[in-house]
Amino acid sequence: MATMAHTITVQTQEDFEALVAENNFELSAAIVKTILKNLKGRKRHVHILEINVLEEQTIYDITIDRKDMLESLEKNLKIHEDNEAYEVCSEIVKAIEYLKSK
Image (cartoon, rainbow, N blue to C red; front, side, top):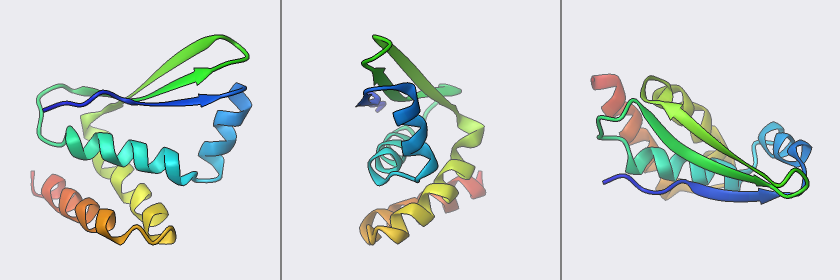
């Protein structure tokens, strides 16, 4: 069952870029949560984040291609380890194993 994307509100596009550059945990958690909920599906592209940029009064929809989920989970595993979110790390590892077996 697919889930709606997580919304993150920032003042400027630069603020969002800074969140990405600093491996922001909230951003990482939103990405992982959405991937995990959409792991078994048929849609090739999954809506993963909605970025609300207040200064521009713009909303950016970010999607992930199903074939990029493995790489994204591997990158986000490190962020979760650094933030000691070990229960989610366990789920990420299981999802990585699942994707590698496909």
